[in-house]
Length: 585
Image (cartoon, rainbow, N blue to C red; front, side, top):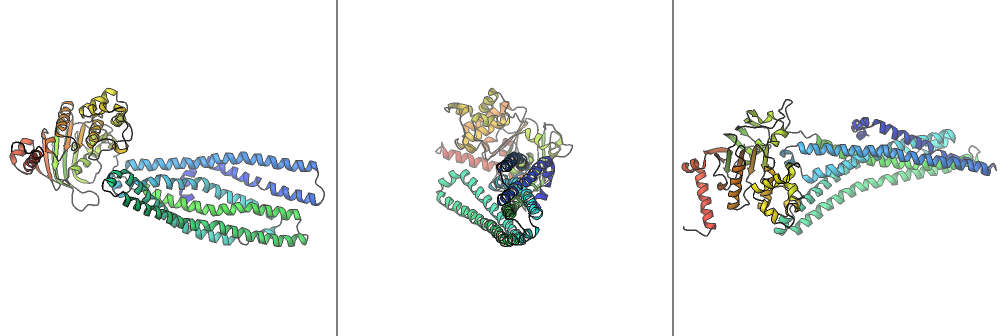
């Protein structure tokens, strides 16, 4: 019953629907008592030669009216109770999705996508069943069972009723024990399904990599193993689930046996008529459903309880990035000052950034260079306010980043990440995603600056070309340029290109940079790159090493220092010369 109390907040919100539905169920339970009683009366009238055609028509009319009324009421309570349970599923699904979108990247480093999908599908479905079929079976088993027992006691014989109910405590103890086992095993089964879900999503996403390395057979075997685990754990659930009906059937069988034996004795002794015994047996038949419903109730409740526990655990995960009550609801503009004394990613023991300080005036371009793991991405994540736990101060337009609403801050930043994500829709829709109200010419202009317009118009369907999921139908360079066009369509105050030109050739890179310089004279740009040719025109270049700035200046200044930047530049020039076949070396 715990899960019903935990869902009490929802039952209070939908109290009138549930009150109406439960009231209708009570009426159905009362009306179900009419047919057995009429059958008993008709049998006694036949035995006493009192039944005639008029009385038979009256009894048939009562049965017909009862059936019609029950049909209407049963239709209505389904609208109330099942409709409310669907509303709960919709509510929980929306809460989960809002929670997912509010969580920081640290959350997704701990949680698997397949597991999150399982929470939003299977677990919510189990909770919905609790608020629908669970309420039905609870009310129906109590009201039908209660009214049937009262009818047996007060209209037939209380002694025979007590005898028939002797096996009931055994059923109650057994189903309670089964319920505890079911809760534990269903929790494990749901976890196994989450793993399978995650494996499926991961395998489909990485199908190209698996085929490239010839690991598709091994992946299929791994999938089979996880699938078998799901089957095994669900079979363990089914083994417990399958005990309910046989146990209840055994109890019902014993009740029938006792009723027939002692009922026959009462009839022979003259304490009960044959009609009453038939009515009693009919009432006992009505008790079968409440007993079965009672077993189903344990099943539904334990499944719903296990799933609701999983959902609440997820919803209780704290949101890392929270707006201050008086946060500005405007987009930041102006100079950018970055001063971070220390920053560690959650779970790390060593700082990702130490004593990083730079100022970028509005309209300037900052280049960030360094080896993998030097701290480039850490700077960008702090600017995007994906993490707040740092020592220092970052200001944008004379205010700290956390002084702005996170939504407004991110609306001012056009971010092109290293891992480009394209939606499974048209190229036009992918570019216009950030601004659905953009005109066709605005979309085309963003594509021209990103040097992807000419590529698109050469496709047979042009901008209407469908992009496969995550952009699988495009080359790496094309995906990068579509992502750049999408960010440019925002006309952002700050454009961040996180190693976003790595897949284009040197000529295309130069064209993009020149177009950006011309189109964004009054806007700020940050470029991280391993290829130094992308940074030569930046007003400021910082060189990172192990999370610290080791060199800072313009391209010419850094070349004159002949330090790390100079060495990296000379090495890349040599590599380019070798690629061209040695040149005039």
